[in-house]
Length: 462
Image (cartoon, rainbow, N blue to C red; front, top):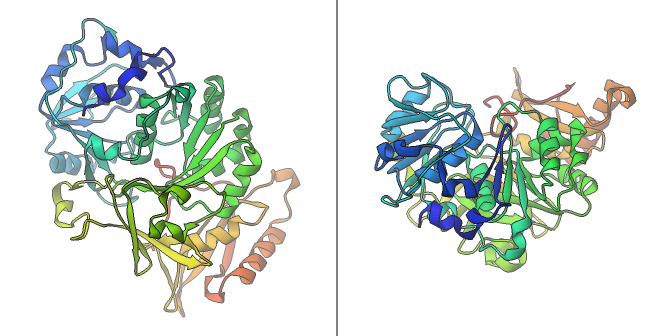
C-alpha cells in the first residue's frame, strides 16, 4: 500500500481539497501537477527530513514522497534548531526538504516553493515501502523519533462511504504530529480539510473554517477552551466535534455540548506510539470499564485493539502500534515482550468507569503524598466561572512541595466576580471534592495559559 494509490477515488473529486492560509489545492491537481517535479527522482530511496513551515506545502510533499523515499521524517515547525542535528543523526537523514533557506546547512538541502504545485507531465511510480517517522510531542529534551508504516497509521481509519464525501474537516493540530496526521489522512481519503496555519489566530482560523463550511472539527481540550474563550467558536456549526491529546474533563465536554448541541461530541485516546485506541461519545469524561472486556462495538474500542491496566497505567497492543524508536532511543524498547505499549497514562476506577488522572511523570509530591495536576484541574474546570486552569508545584520547606493553581476566568472582564470571590469559590469546590493535600495552597488569576505547538498546556517539570 502506498499513499497515492490509497487515496483512491477521492483524489479525483473536485470537492477533495486542502485549504491552507494562502491557497486551496484540490487533490485533483496532483494528477497533472507536482510540487517537486523532476526533483522527486533525486529523493527516491533516500531518507528525507520533511520540514516546510507551511502545513499545506508539507501535506502535498508527503503525498508525493510516500512510495518514493526510503524514510520520511515529519518535523513540526517548532523543532528547536539545537535538536535538529540529533534528529538528522537518528534518522540517518540524507536530504532536508524545506520552504526556507539555510535551515540545515550540514545536510543536502532541497527547497520547495509551495504550496502551489507546478503543472506538467507527472508519472507516479512506487518503489519503496516508505517508513514514516514522527517526533514525540514532549516539551523538554530531544524528541524521540517514532517509526510507523502507512498501514499502522491507517489502522483506525474506516472505509469511506459515498455519503462521507461532503465531509469538510478542520483541525487545530499540526499535521506533522500524530493527531494532525490522522485527520489529514481521514480528510484526503474522503472529504476535504482546512489546515490551521502556524501563526494563525484562532479567530482567523475559525473564520476560514466557516467559509469552507466545515462539518468536522478536531483539537485538544486546550485548543477548544481557547476557541470558546475567543468568542469565535460561534462562527462554525459542526456536526462532529472531537477532542484528543489531553484529558477531556467534564467541564470542557459540557461547554462544548452547550455550544454545539446538534454535534456528535467525541473524545478519543491516541498516542504517537500506541496509535488510535478508542473513542467515547456518551458525553462523559473517562471511559467504560467494558473496554477492558472487549466490548468494542458498544464503547468505541478500535478493531484489533487490546488493553490492560497494570499499576494504574494503561497499556495498549494494536495494529496501530508504532514499530519502534530510531537512534539513541532504540535502547528503550517501545513495547514489552507481549507487544503492549505503556502509554504512561494513569487511571482510576470509579463506579464501573475509568478516569484519566494524569501522566506517570507529572506527579507532585506533597509530603510523600502523590498529586496529579490533571485531577485537580478537572475539579477546578468544573466551576462555571472558570474557563481553564493549570496546576503545578511550589517548593515548601516542610512538605517539599505544595499545590498551586492558575485559573483563567470564563466571564468577560466587565462582568467577572471580584478576584478574591472567584478564588474563594474555587477553593471551596476543591475542599469539597479533594483530599486536603490536593487543595491548592495558592491561586493566581491569569488571562491566558501558554500552549505548546501541539496544543497542550505547557507545564513546568515537576
